[in-house]
Length: 509
Image (cartoon, helix red, strand yellow):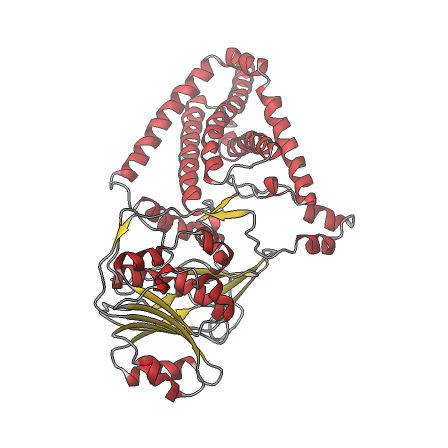
């Protein structure tokens, strides 16, 4: 009789654990809706159905997997007084981490994982730095509240298991979850084969989401030509399906008291170091820093003048021009000298270039081959920025700045020029953030942990002196700056944050 009671209790406990995990799956599915709104909603009906079905199946998979790994071994002890609070603790911890992960994914575009534990603390601090100091305490209190609710649920389910099981069986919850799981993976195999973007672009939307890939499975079976697939998938970074979403910002600026010149230099005969040293010898008022710009001179000029990534060039004429608006509001004219012909198509739209004014914002480009050619460039204005373009993408250029500096950042980028003009020279103040990609170099410097840029063929990410180049097939090559030795690429967390930052102003048409 004693053994029968033990077996009956064990059977009851196993059944309770299964239904307890399934109940928590419904909570997880509710949290999954946060991920839905973190990315653009699929436009097609098939994409929306897939998102719903895969979410249901994946939520069931995650919580059942958590039950098998963390709870089932405890239920095997056949001690309900231990199993119930432990399962409640695991469920509360999982739900809390899922909530935090959803916040981080919404902000940075990547998920917490054990391969990026060294980034979790930093990124969570970045996420909460603008929130009240009691936010972390609030998260802890939320965990306690969820734990308490889980304890109540666990005990209620234990006492009324048969009744609760009949309700879930009647609505056929378990078959629905299993069906959604299977159909979701089959749909992904089809989408992966046919390059159906409304489905494949959701691959990384949910945590621990690694759908079965047709590329790997079929290429290994010999039934699939992987080279033909790669040829079909070979694309440049085409933004024709996107539009740039930049609002017309409200701001006020002060009239300047001096001209400002921005010059991009390139040389085939002089090194970056030689140009920097000679300019500083000509004028000791220049401060210099390493400058990261892996792009061509034309793409660099666009980033310098617009403050936007080079891949936005085709959409520039449809975007609000913050710099031109600021120059017009302060009565300053703009000048563009010696720019390449391909660059003039968007610089010619500056209305401030058509006016006469006492002060000027001048942008120019020169190829220099002798040091003597630098004298006229270095003596142009009291406030100026000279950028020396590197010869190769894996080399550093230089930024030389003259003006009222606090201290230059250790490394600068093309994106720092526009904030410097707006905030440092014109003293502009904005009612809300204008979404700048760089920083004002006349202010207290912020040291960059990573930088990102892109042209029509590659995305470039700089992180801890390593350049990572990503092509349109997501192939990565990481090299040490200057030495060009093969390097370990950054973890996915850094790459995801950089790419999310790069495309933050893009929305689907």
